[in-house]
Image (cartoon, rainbow over all chains, first blue to last red; front, side, top):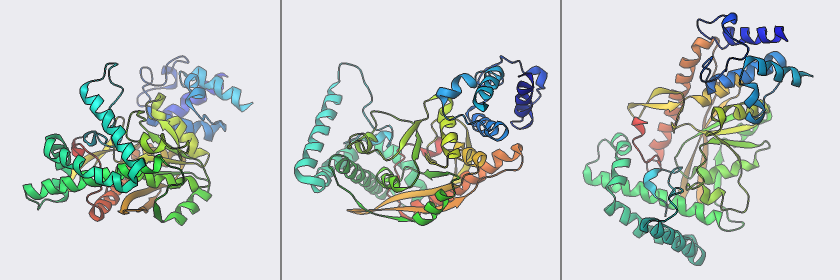
Length: 84
Length: 312
């Protein structure tokens, strides 16, 4: 589980190109959108595509995504549940 | 008739206060007369009723002239004040005819307009690849009527749009017999509906977006009719991330009973590095603006953005 969270942090930094942030700066419960990491709706598009690409998991609507997108910890939970 | 001054998507009366003003009662009475005329005298009756309504708008509303003037000054820089006034009349009248058609289609079974879709085979071929497609259109021509014919596509069609329940849009799609040809993804939802739109494209489905209207969110500046204008760039991010094509497609009313839906351009927005994304989106928006300009060159009086487009 820790590996999954670390991988997600690296994806955010390397592929969504969060500026001036290291994986250690991203807390597991930090909000991804708005306050927190400051991602926006266009970043959400990239995140959905990257999750599909790296983990084979599709987030198809915000009913599912609402909780997953609140933090790295919840996103990791979502991916783990849907990979099974 | 609708309040043309607010533009297609925002042209309804709005929810309003519980106690209706005299203007709202007058508008409601106007709607009743309009639909009664359509039922009794068909579309011809609607077109005839349109003439005094257009005249009232032209003579009584400075607002409508003010709202259309920014477009006309750029599209027809050579026109004097009197000819600009007439050109405003042509646009209001053509918009009224589109509304009459839409109401007529929406209130009767089996009614259709004769339509032609130029490039439909190309669209079918794209869709069959399973990559999805972003259909980018604009507030020109009878776009809603024309888009209804996309229900023939072999995959679901979604419209990413601000959904105003009171807007003119409902007169065709919501007053019809449950035959709305596409599923609406509301931009008012969480993250502007982008997650749902991405998922639809990933499933190989079609998402239509109005490429001309900037309501909120990210945008880029491009040239249109000689001046810079800000256009939304979400469509290009969507297409580029998923690997789907952008299809620029515009509608025009070509006759009393006919319309044209033309696919003008198809391209794949793309970037190697994320730092290149903004410029790639700007280039795509510029390409869309060139296509839109070609369309309004051909159909100058079917422009229905009733506000200063260059200040959005």
